[in-house]
Image 1 (cartoon, helix red, strand yellow):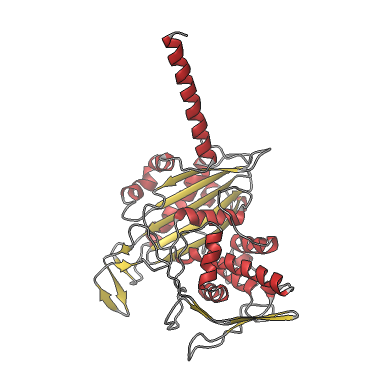
Image 2: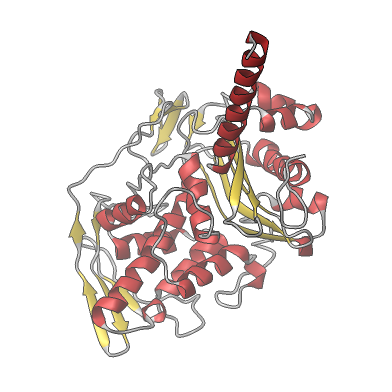
Length: 416
């Protein structure tokens, strides 16, 4: 063989190997660097100021387009912008962990006590400290007015109810909640505190006794005190120039080392494992019973006005209340075209959307997980955040960009 022929053969083998490697990376869900940023740069009127201030606003975006192949398992094409570059506060988006863990716990209790229907069984939460109150009644539950796991899950999913999360946190317990997330493959999850709970709880790792009144079985879950300690390890845990603490200004950044946290990748993977457990991610996934999984997904998909129990006033809870992407999707098609299964979060200047968008017209499914921090004055806890001015338009613009540039047609996701 001549030197030229030999060189040509080597080149062809190398090129073929490169193609194989590229295909493996795509099939494994690796990020395609630059593709999402390029799409944003092509729309400067919407995204130029976002790109210029991306580091300051801690912008992170992960888009995963589902390829439902015939004759094989579905795969993902993943596109990222600044994914997991620094810490972000997940706010209410972290509540999905408690909903999933609570439903897994209920299934385990049913198996252990040879009973059923515990998701709809009344439960009672004991006082956590001296002077605390019993939690027994739930007026919003039109089926009996009692606290149940299923009803709290629905409240959490529909309007991001804080007491619902706190009750499910007590049901699971600090250790079990973290254990279940880690068994699923979500190692970055840190849940160190309840959300918007006015009670003076000395140690957030302490959880109350919970009693479940099942049919033929009354189950007592004892009060628990954890000795574990979980912390965040992402860059950028010191946030802002200062913060308010009981109306006093503290002139140092707020430390989020021991606040709740999760990586952007794990946040989206959690949603994928819930909504599309058939998509292989290389993680164990959840041990959810199918009826429990379907109930949670339904609640995350409904708008508040579609709920029959609990009932919500559409004037107070419009369709976009807990669906930040909806206004942008409506630019691309009417409301009946889209099915959004999601969990949002908003606090400390952070806006978080974790959504699965299904296009009912084409059959396409695409996951969009995005974060933005808007806090122009640098002060946390002053309730002066540019949510409406900056974060909401960004989420809408992002939704429109993704479904017009990253979705395919006919159930096969093809990047155009």
